[in-house]
Length: 179
Ligand code: HEM
Image (cartoon, rainbow, N blue to C red; front, side, top):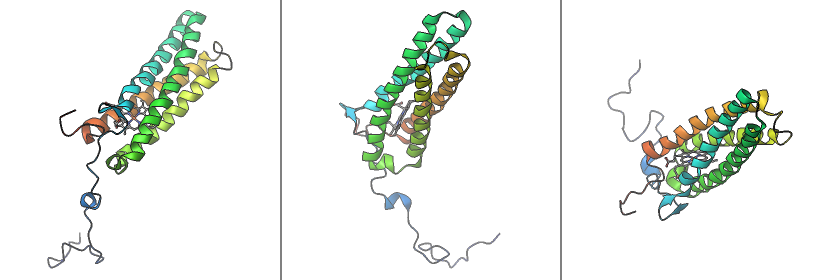
């Protein structure tokens, strides 16, 4: 393995170019406070509870339809999937504005990973609802149920990753402790 000579300048790389500290190069790196908020509480975090819960409800209603054959559950799944999609869009809009407006959020790769996961999730939620609009009872077995299972898996991953943004990177949190 080749080591740099001891006389090498720590201010420059081996190619002779000046080294740049990525943190000090972005003075706004630690500016991650939420801007899309009500009294300092992020709207995105409040809204995401709806698509998360409604996506799980859709999967549950599909399961009950499969088990009982009662059309009530297919109708419940139609409404739950529609509301999951629409609330998901609203949550996604609040999250996207936050991502674009707050420089410390924009600067982190993890924020963009969450964005990509979320957009994939929203397209699955949209497909799950749209497919049911063509005939909500026939749609459940098997494709509606499979789409619901896929959506539930994606919701778990996206939601977990959103929590990572907050708990690991303190994104959307208040730093002054004054609220
Ligand atoms: C479509 C674009 C989306 C963007 C750009 C986005 C961005 C963000 C950002 C910046 C945060 C940090 C907290 C904040 O500043 O509000 C966050 C947190 C979070 N996101 Fe998203 N998000 C999107 C969609 C979604 C969707 C569809 C879900 C649903 C599963 C979701 C689930 C979460 C969760 C659970 C948190 C943690 C909230 C907390 O614990 O306070 N996000 N997201």
